[in-house]
Image 1: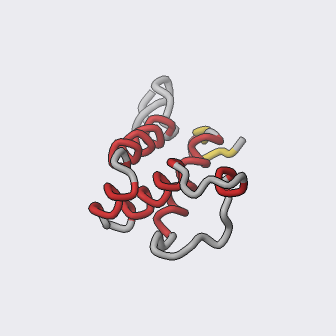
Image 2: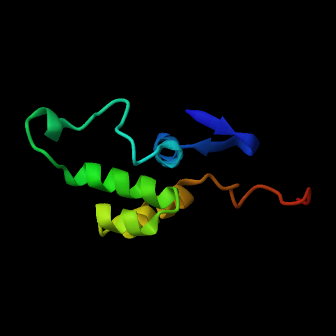
Length: 103
């Protein structure tokens, strides 16, 4: 498992969600993806709610709120849930450790 300063442990889930948000923020939702991982498209469906949500989150992270709502109406809610989960998983210093050098 990954460790951070002060022996804080970072969960694999935190790494996953943080990397996903950073990758979505770095993408251009107006362009087609370099790699398409959507299994629905491989089996013949034209659209997928997951793809819409991925595009919507990318629009949100790039500041295009109206396009995000157009791509998926629940995207602000999903973004809030993901960001809250990242905040919840962020490692904290344990309560039993000394603060500011005092014992």
